[in-house]
Length: 306
Image 1 (cartoon, rainbow, N blue to C red):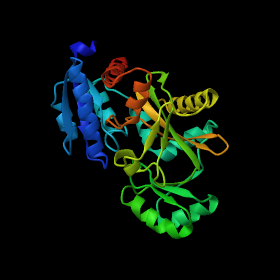
Image 2: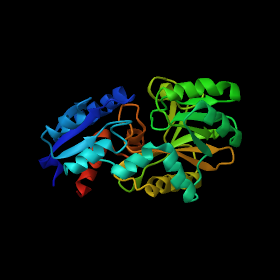
Image 3: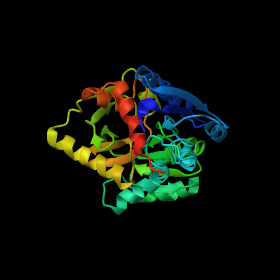
Image 4: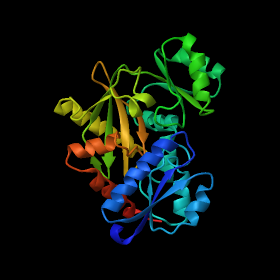
């Protein structure tokens, strides 16, 4: 199969809390494919997503969906059933990566460094869990992306508000020890680990506003790390990514503490592809422009085996 002889559907939108970001990613991807001469069109998936996919005529799906319903294995399962090649990780890897706690259980089993955490479903659970953890803590909806619903908590008095916010987005909540230090992210396309990107924000942490709204967030490419540190972080990112069988492309978030020790935070199997997004920034630094990056990701779908 040849990408230039194929009809490519860019799946975007969805019904998750990341819908608006997904639409931006999807439209940017679609524009890049069209500029490259690919026969592509977009599908804005809403409540009738499965029917919309089934009734559409395409050869390959470029998944630009973020969050639940699109990044968690659901759409991947539909496409597998239809024997349609698609970009990104398969059903199982997508589902595991979306579940932050399951991901961390695998990392822990392999001895990969990741902050201590507990899974809770009630405020009472949370109060019990924090007795085994150290403040400050991050309280996170288990299946959300883009830092939606996340709070940084410094003491027990802040727990209730953090729980109530996370509970709006997910009935399963993860509480995790916060790693004080620098935040980095590593993009992976195929088996190529891109240069590390450092993020600096004036916010409490790299939250939704820092990612999509703030003009003060600084992205450092090169990261400012020395060659050895960069190599260590890239190696850990690949281990975290490959340990849950991710493929195609993705992004791994890592914190580095005051002792220069890196800690795995999470894997994104369908990262943002907007003008502010991190994967395109890393690609640009090594001479891969946005259109070429999109083509590389689209071509990775050709490895699909039904």
